Length: 320
Image (cartoon, rainbow, N blue to C red; front, side, top):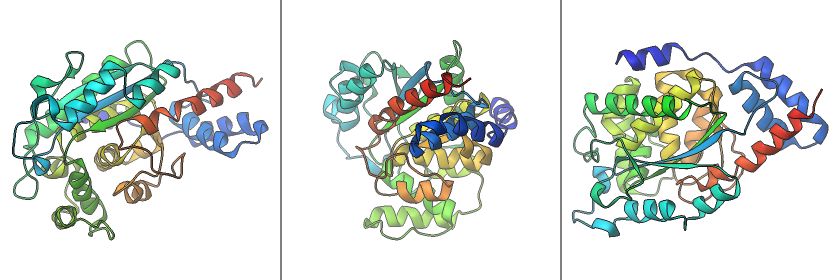
């Protein structure tokens, strides 16, 4: 826990002065979207000239007990199938990453069929979570270890320098988990979920409103939520902006913001997303780059922002 406390204490607010200077540096392009991105990047990086050359996409896989199908699926499990497609290069995310020359790191934070995951994955997990509708999803110890695993991964990724991190997530049951964490953040059940299980989870979350971030992570998060939240807080402590994809990454950002509110200034929302994600972004005060929902949050939407960030960096480099 001392590692986590140290990281949280070292997070400073994003720089408003650098955000405005970065925006002004690209204002001549008459592209409001690029100006907004420049401000987000400049504020997070504490620089008037945002950088984008050194970047990575991390996709974190973790299954939730609330979504357990009750039978062993092996290599046919949806989480394994999606991770394999990324690892083999056939997924849309892999194609976008190749086009933008961005490496992908796939992390097994707690896939239920971990033995069937591709051999190239980074294994950080202690297994899937339990059913949050009937018991805490994780122990406090497991939640803390997941956060610290994410912090350790962040330090490793940034060892040679890192300008931007894009994140995605894979895992069954992440939708219900995100509803519970959103309910806890709002202190109320969000309307329009349209799913009885998610509404029940949100009600359980709302009943725990006001609890600490670690407690709520243990109660309702999943293994990938913990690792991604650890990544987010560590990147914020190192002035590295993080691009969010769908609701699973949004849930991790909620937890990170509960632990350290200043991390909000280091977050970039790729797209509006689906299900709980629009409400999560609204609660975090984030405006998406793309006002549409893209994919299922495995990182494809976040990867689509990278070419725009390249344009911001190129325009900034030409100034003065």
